[in-house]
Amino acid sequence: MAESGCVEVAPISSETPFAEHLGETVLAVGEERVSGSGRVALEITFDSGRVRCEAWSGDLRLSGK
Image 1 (cartoon, rainbow, N blue to C red):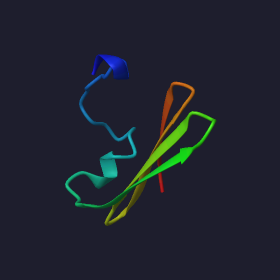
Image 2: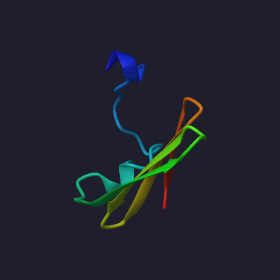
Image 3: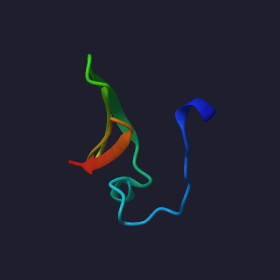
Image 4: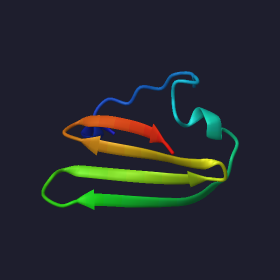
C-alpha cells in the first residue's frame, strides 16, 4: 500500500462513525467522484445508518448519517 500513503491501525473507539455499526451487515456501498476536483467519496450503508468517507486534497473525512 505504499502508493496509498500511511495506514494507521488502532483500537476502535466511540470517536469513529463506524463504532455504532460494529457487527452489522453491510447492505450497500456506493462511490461518488467529482471530476476535476480530486474529490472521492465512499458511502457504506448498514441496518442502522450510513457512514460516508470522503477524500479531498489528501484529507480523509468520516461522517455518520
